[in-house]
Image (tube, rainbow, N blue to C red; front, side, top):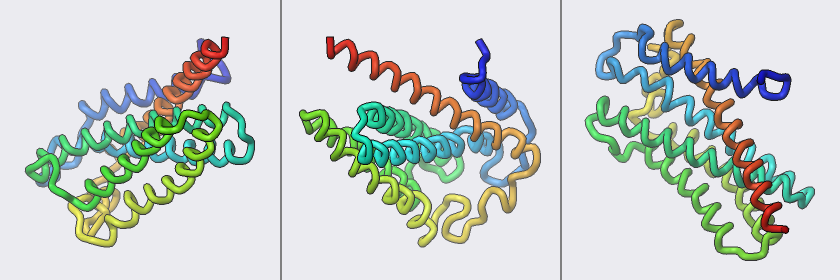
Length: 222
């Protein structure tokens, strides 16, 4: 039922559905090498935008936990990292599929590919760290400190280092970004809704996982 509290969830569903339908059916620029694979820009890139937003949420609630010590904040930090890593993996997979058809191989050791993989490993290590500590409060505190440092490391790996060397990715190493040569109005009409839609879906999944974890914790307390 549509209400003032869940309208954004329905918006996410509508926008992602819209981007899938028109992403496959709508017109795209006739570009050499990319051709029909250009349609992957409606999936690969928006998933990574959503990942970045969820890692911001993770860092935000990690800072909040360090200030408040509330279990509520730790739950949000954990679940946002969970869904962020999921979207990051989906982004890597869709990127590999795209690379296979445009660059000739799924993994070409491109600087951005390598940096993105390392960034995801940094966040996967977050869960290894949590799993290695038994005391709940100590676990939450140490992992919160880790998250605060992990976020800037991820930003450097994904957005800064690849721009300092040659890269096959658009916008890096002297290659023009999509918006400078092929992001026409037809593409924008699908791309921007896809970004908003995937962010909303990512936040919704995070909220659902947060509620599930809260129920699980309460059942263990009984």
